[in-house]
Amino acid sequence: MRVVYSPAHLAHDIVTETVMGAVIPANEVAERAERIRATLEADGGFTIEAPTEHGTDPILAVHDPGLLRFVEEAWPAARAQAIGRPNLIADTFPNFRMFEGMSPDVVAGIEETQFAAGRAGWWGLDTANPLVAGTYGAARAAVDVALTTADLVLGGERAAYGLCRPPGHHAARSMAGGYCFFNNAAIAADAVTRATGQRVAILDVDYHHGNGTQQIFWRRGDVFYVSLHADPERQYPFFLGRANETGEGEGAGANLNIPLPAGTDDETFLAALDRGLEAIAATPGDVVVVSLGFDTYGHDPIGDFALTTAVYHECGRRVAALGRRLVILQEGGYYRPALGANARAWLRGAEGRDDEPLPAPGFGAAGSDR
Ligand code: Q9C
Ligand code: ZN
Image (cartoon, rainbow, N blue to C red; front, side):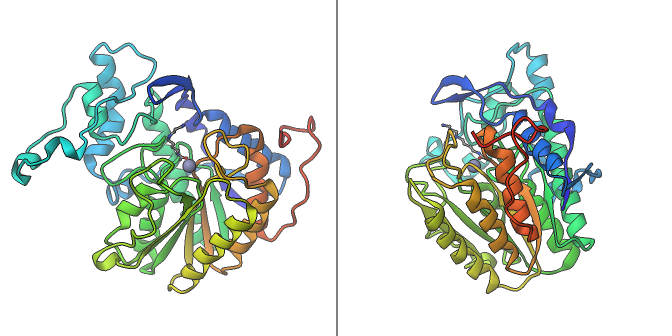
C-alpha cells in the first residue's frame, strides 16, 4: 500500500498538555507518527512517499479563513506580545451562555481579540491543543498528506494511507480543538466530492466523536458521516456525539453516531462497525474516507475500550470488504508501543494481506506490543 508521510510534523513538537488545569506529558507527540512510519517501513509491504503541495484553497473550502489566519499567526503574535511560554494554550473560551439574553445583533458584533490567550480561546474548543512554533507548518503538511492520499485513490489506488499529524477530526469549520487544527479528513472528503461529483462517506473509528467532521457536514447530503466512539456522556468532546444527532436540512439522515460504553471489546466494536458499514453500503458512492484512530486500544492512556491488535486486522478487512476505495487517514491513538503494530495490522487487513506477526523485537525499528 502507498503511504503518504511528511517529516514536517516533527516541528509540531508538543511536550506537555494540560488536563483539568494540570500540566502532564503530552499524549499527541511526534513519536506517534514516527513509530507508525518505522513499523510500516520494517514491514516491507508499504511504500512511503512525500505529499504534494495543495495550497490553502481546499482548506478554505471547509474552514473559516479566520481559523487559518489564527493558526498561522498565533505563535509569532504571542512572541510579539512577549509571551515567553514554550507553547500557547487557551484558557478563556466564549462559552455560548456568556451571551444569554443578549440579542443576536449584539452577539454577532462580538469580535476576535488580538491578545494571544483570548484569540486562542476564540478559535478553540478546549485546552488540549497546545500550539508551538512549528504547528502551522505541520498542520498544513497534514492537510497536504490527506489531499495527496485522496489523489492516489482518485488516481486509481484501491486504498492509500495518509499518516496525518496533527490529527483533524475535532476541528470544526471555525474551531480548533482536541489536538486538531485543520480537519484533514473533512478537507479530503470535500475535495473528493468536488473532484468526482459523487457522494462520499466518512467512517470515523477513532475512540472520540469527530465533532468537527459532524459540524462541517451537518447540513450536507453529499457527505455521509458515520462515527463509532465513546459515549459523550462520559468522554470528550462531551457535548456532541449522541445518537439523536442525525443532521439537518440537506444533511438530514446523513449523520450516524454510534456511542459505545466503557470496556467496549473486540466483539462489541465489530458489531458496531458492521452497523456503520451497512449504513454506508446503503448510500451511493465509491469512496470512503476513514478517520482511523487507535485510542480504542486496550492500553490507550486516555481511552477506556479494550480492543486488541488482532481486531484491527479484522476491522481493516471488513472495511475493505465494502468494495469501495479507501482514503485512510490517521487520527488519534496514544499508546505508543503498540501504534505501529496496530496501524500495520489494520492496513494489512484492508489490503487483504494476512495478519503475520511483526519481525522479532530488536530486529529493525518495528517494536513490540508491550
Ligand atoms: N485526559 C484525538 O484523539 N482531551 N483527540 C484529553 C485527556 C482531549 C483527543 C483529555 C482528547 C482529544 C484526535
Ligand atoms: Zn481520539
